[in-house]
Image 1 (tube, rainbow, N blue to C red):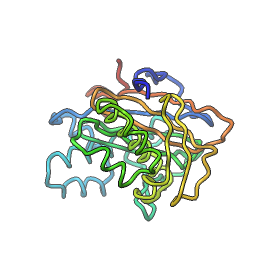
Image 2 (image 1 turned 135 degrees about the vertical axis):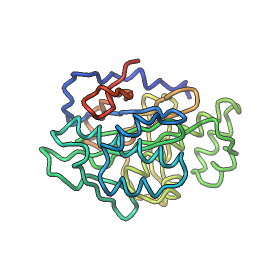
Image 3 (image 1 turned 90 degrees about the vertical axis):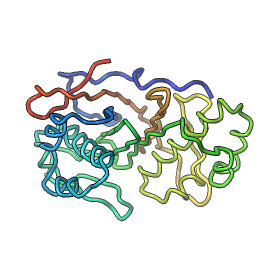
Length: 273
């Protein structure tokens, strides 16, 4: 597997851009959390949440979970309001039986779909109008896991065999790349993780052209699935999955989000590399 491309290599979303989403567009917004949010940022993010979310936020006891919950919910609301004339606090959400969130209100010009992921220090929100079958996942590759043992127990044999052939240095990145792709697919489809790990077979000889096929226990057609795989930094990998018109090339773009206390009371704005 070639070295992963960097998320900064994607076409950039910039302040002032027309953020209309076409049939093949996916926009990935990512935000880096500090070890401790400054009080002025906490207050700015709190203003973006709904009353129900503020109640849930207040009930969380662990500071790291409070910070992650606050930033994730605020980022999602702020991002969605880049595309529709809706205040961040006015969005309402529903979840399916497996916990996949979607917009329930208000009614907007065209449906907008999103997926969220977070790991220690980073949050990502992917949005599209192309399909509700969208998923994004971030994985840390510096975790101490027995990659081969996990692959042999949960991945298809073809993938486990491919990982065994790699050197230990290359194996770790290849393992987490596959795990991130599987998680993004599981989120997009709203299925059980175990089924996704065992049933989705990825070929990523070239990370820019990820291929997928499906085996039991999944009954899924590979036509129409599009994937993007990126390195966020030396410790994190991001994977995107979406099912759309098979004849349409995926057009992902990305932007970092930063804190700006002067940004019209919302506290967040598009950052610069």
